[in-house]
Amino acid sequence: MSGCTDNTAVNYSADAITDDGSCFFFSTTPFIIETPSGFPEMNIPSNNPMTVEGVSLGEKLFKDPILSRNNTQACINCHQQNFSFSDPNQYSTGIDHIQGIRNASALINIGWNTSFNWDGSSLTLEEQAFEPVSNPIEMHNDWKVVESTLNTHADYPTLFKEAFNIDYIDSNYVVMAIAQFERTLISANSKFDRYLKGEAQLTVSELGGYAIFNSEKGDCFHCHGTQMFMDNLFHNNGLDPEPFTDLGLGKITNNASDNAKFKTPTLRNIELTAPYMHDGRFSTLEEVVEHYNSGGEYSLTVDPLMKKLGVGLQLTNQEKQDLIAFLKTLTDNNFISEK
Amino acid sequence: MKRIFVIFTTISLVFTACEKEEEIIEGCTDTGSVNYNSNATNDNGSCKYNLSINFTHTIDGNPLEINQMIYTNTASQNYSIQTLRYLLSDITLHSANGTSTLLDEVHFITISDPSTFNLDIQDLNSANYIAISFTMGLDSLKNITNNYLNESFFPSFSWPDFIGGGYHYMQLEGDYTTALQGYATHTGGTDGIDFSFTKHFPISLNIANANTIVIINMEINNWYSNPNIINLTTDGIMGNANKQSLLQANGIADVFSIFYPIK
Image 1 (spheres, chains in turn green, brown):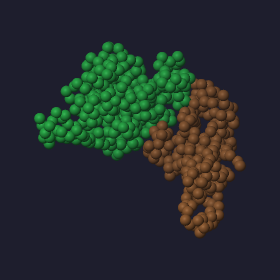
Image 2 (tube, rainbow over the protein chains, first blue to last red):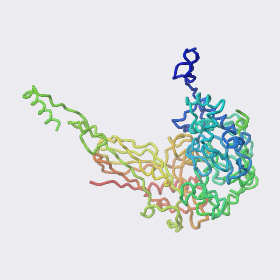
Image 3 (cartoon, each protein chain N blue to C red):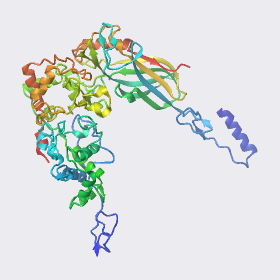
Image 4 (tube, each protein chain N blue to C red):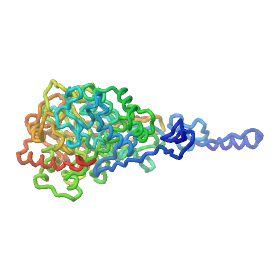
């Protein structure tokens, strides 16, 4: 019998007696992340370097319902590309037709986040990817079952071999591949980006909104600042009075001063990611702006930057329209059409 | 010490030439140093020492307690503190021989993360240090948008280009008068004016000692007191060069103080 007889080769055949020159060896192609202007370097875990093979495998897994218990739901069902990898429904529905209490986050420039989920419950993308697969109200699967399904699949063993040089697919490699793909979901080609590069003009209304956004009157920039349009922090933006129904960060840290604080989302592609807030309570940007404009509700942990509770920003109708016009310049249509 | 040793080895060469020669091993012989070499027989002045700079925060001399409306400023307003974050830059020790040692270019301190309360220096030369200096905020050479992209205070500390760009020097926030009103004492450069300032404290510190600690304390209430009495407001002050100037003067006056072990 002939085949590859070199046991360090990817296609080593234990049965082969004669080497037929077919051996090929493990090698991956680095996947280069281009850092957009005004962004830091992405923090990529040293044990999961970006490779073309890993990203490609991660994309396949992200879009494959094989991860769910009854083979009906993939990551992309609740993180839809047309909606900047978010869910247009207020709450996502799992395979058993059960809904959660939070709106699925948009996966955009997520590689620059320092924690994940609205409550910061995961510190890495790899860790985060474990959760939806086994969560009873999401994919409701068992990772042992996932491993067994993938290991007996026609294609996956080869793809994992090529990406990670492994012979047995362990769940750790599944989340590593998915995380690699998620780190490639980079958006920095909006009209606003082109404006900053001098390649596009903003309208008078959009420019007016840009100024309000960056003024202390509008005071959007403290949480949604820089070209990342987020601060990687958690805030209580005055949505609800006490008692809180969702403790957010406080439930993770067990610190009452963190109650009802949620992670600041990026405003990039915000036009595409309705509904808004951690619980998707607002269906339009107009409602969001009106929330800040009217001041919000008092609670013990409300952010001091919600300075005038019950009074609000007191923006004119024109200013509100301008602000929303500016927010829509952050839409990156390439991001939802590519890939 | 060195001379005596040289004589001793010379004698041993002359009189006990048939025995193994005593070797001189150069190194640091101070057991209190971080690079103590137990084999060294001759101290060559290479000893390095730990220095820890601790950042503390007081109000009226007492340690800061957050989220409680228990403080009163000179304008007789009650207030609480929920957030305190600031940048100190060019933290430098000055020695008697005229040299200076930069300990950290930019150090970010936030009361939500106690690990930022220490700046540990592990390879300080032995010397008599006669002063410590630091800049509150960032001077105009450093305070540039998208400088420091990879530091922990990016992106949350950014200061919009509309108001001059760069970074906040400080974010001091809480409620005042009632829990429904927030204030935000945000300092930084505005209107093209650099409002950072450098404090220079004479000290007398011989580092040749294990684990020396120097404390830089911020007396928070003094931001609002002397020489300018400042009222807390819900209005932002980032674009208000006059307010920034008053806060700068108060900061220079008596907000910071230094504590260090006296021998």
